[in-house]
Length: 170
Image (cartoon, rainbow, N blue to C red; front, top):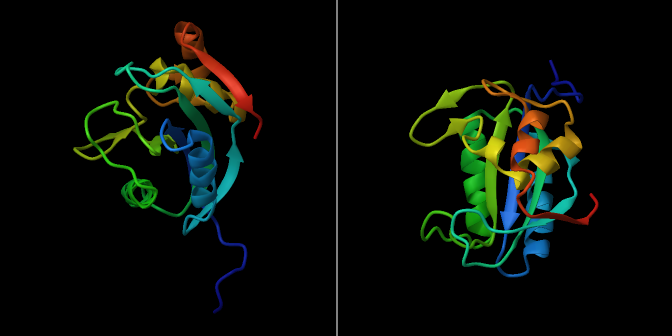
């Protein structure tokens, strides 16, 4: 029997993108393009692009951030490996936590999965504290719920004092 041309993508995933080195706007656009071409996956939505102040290590350039929604057949760890490969192919070098970076890709949500191991924590453990994640996420999924936490919109008000500027529509 031939496989159906209308194959299903059972997993709904949200991925955050960030960059503050080597023309960050271009890096984010490139990252979105690479995610759109990810094997066994399909890009569903992408947010606008946002300029944000760094969090954690403050002595670095502002970031450009976005969030995309994917449908995928990949498992969470397969997706993580694919995202790490995309980062590496774009020149990402990990020097220290919150360091400047060419491209950062983080799995925010994978269905309603709650998972924690040495490599991956789902949902992303700090997403509810970061306006640069919540604003673009809410733009493409207004009624998004963070498993084990609650509606994402409820957290945005708590971190709304964080610097955030929409610079380009999706």
